[in-house]
Image (cartoon, rainbow, N blue to C red; front, side):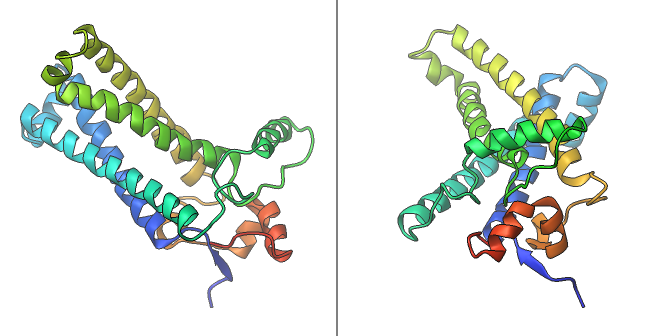
Length: 231
């Protein structure tokens, strides 16, 4: 018999996560291969993917797929708020709250051996940072990507140096995004001893009661008091 569990992610959230993950991986692979095209490893990858034209096509396809997934998610949030009359500002939502700052400070203290571990609610401060990094970052990447995709059109009403500026911003944002997702997110979300070798919750959408009690005690207490959101 499986351990008692609670739904943490809806089917839509899980599907969109997979789409964004695949799109993000494709963007990173093709984008850096195009930018560092003079290196041996980039040339090897380019040869496997149809050269520069194939890389460019795949990069843009991944961009459209990733951006579409984020837009669908935002549309769902609008539907949840306007049609279903849900609360986006609840304690169990993804919007940052003053409590997140307090949790961050207390968590740093706990890591240094001072104080107790914060009573995290449904989503921790680092999970919210991870979430908003995608929502905000995708717009920066999308806008600069469009400038690079259609430089002739944008040059019709923008100074030419804006194209170079878009390239620099696109590259810097890409480096930051890859560092966050492939280092911080991968380690924190999947390579922790508690969930090794991977946290499968994002795939089946559930979390055991024991994990909730341990990792999200504030959320568990709210559920017992009938104040928390279970899905």
